[in-house]
Length: 336
Image (cartoon, rainbow, N blue to C red):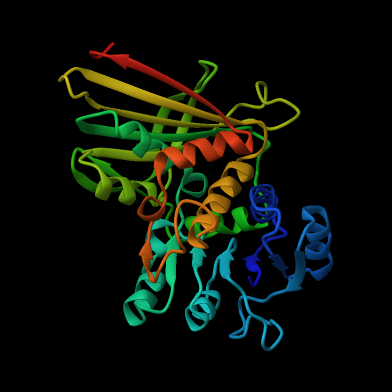
């Protein structure tokens, strides 16, 4: 098999995704690609196994790669602003993962799929923590007859700023006005400013103020369930309660009616003792192995996909625990 090309593979999420893939598949060839060849080589050495390093420039039509180089998948952990990585994947007929697109930025991926629908599988993964939240929500939703509301929140440490790619993503968000897309009582609503705030209680019972983000979980879950209200938020602990290390708490809450008609609110806390980058990396690794047919079925054929299109929720929850995340489930009934 040709290596899976991880563009931005030397960044915080990409390096962790490579490490997760190596744990899951010791013999999978991986190519760590970044602008800094020495940094990419250092990450490749840390990942070990059949891992190589290369320089890449997503601003170039040929990505700056050697002529004749072939890859089994192209995973873009940085913004593919010119769609050059996407075009390369379609030309080669291999899976492509768009990791850094907000809900307002998916037009180019959709257009390239419409133009060449039979060339390659294109996975839109601009979801909370690499799609892990959406799959967790759908796992909970399977217990209910009907779903009324889904609320996702990610609580991170105050000093968890992410890497350069994350900073670039949020700078783009500021430039586009910073509006968040929510499904509010059955209506699509763009919100800004104070209207995006929400009180979030983490796994330790501590309350935080979160802000809604324009992530793809909202549209994925609206299409997959009958929920009338869906949102995804991020909150930071205050510096007084943030420790020396990082802890990320992904909170997924689903409310609706059970098959016996009783009201229920179901909740997952997915907790990882690292920055938000690692849970994101786990999601990307799980999606990549599925696209390549390394777990969960044969390789995924050409198409335009969200993570719930190709991944089984129960399998994703099991994979997260296998990789080291702690999963805590709780429930309340009859409005209690």
